[in-house]
Amino acid sequence: MIASSQLYLFAGAALVLLLIPGPAVLYITARSASQGRMAGIVSVLAIETANFLQAVAAALGLSAILMSSALAFDGVKYLGAAYLIYLGVRKLLAPDNGAEAEVVKRESLSHIYWQGFFVNILNPKTALFFFAFLPQFVDPARGNVIGQNLLLGAIFVGLAIITDSLYALLASSLAEKLAGNKSFQKGGRYFAGLVYIGLGITTALAGAKK
Image 1 (tube, rainbow, N blue to C red):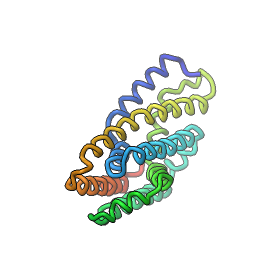
Image 2: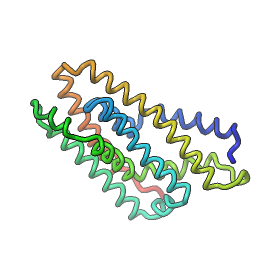
Image 3: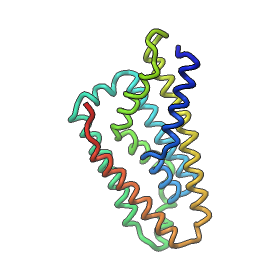
Image 4: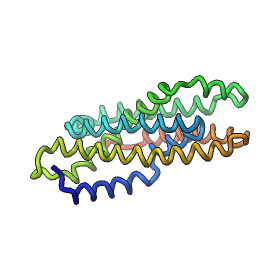
């Protein structure tokens, strides 16, 4: 299997990437700030479930099919972008009065989980990342290549759960301290909505990789 020194190198590189806020972190912090700590943690688990499936797909070579087809890449990309923009518009159009709190309470954790899962599984750039990043740390001379890729994917997802959860806890704690501030509550809703829309537009504008 993979040498210990190579695993340490991979873990270090993964941590550097994970600590830099990206689209997943923006989504998680927006969810945590607008709906609380548990919603943020559930979103982390949803996103990392999708990440692990993307890593498995990359290890099995399934991502290569998506990468090789511009039509498939664009189809997944625009579907994911449309879903994010829909979430953002719905958040922006939510009422400003007490009814908004009722809407948030009625949104179950299972619903939050599946939203986060589909947001990430429909992002082809995630598949591209694993397809390009993991093989750099694989040594074919040390055994099963698929097994090495799966191990690296599992390590990456494990580290991501830790770092993303820290962002979720930080965002939710800040939101709790400002919970009584109506201006913050309104601003938080707009922040979440604009983050979703911004991520959707960014996803839509991402070019297919050849």
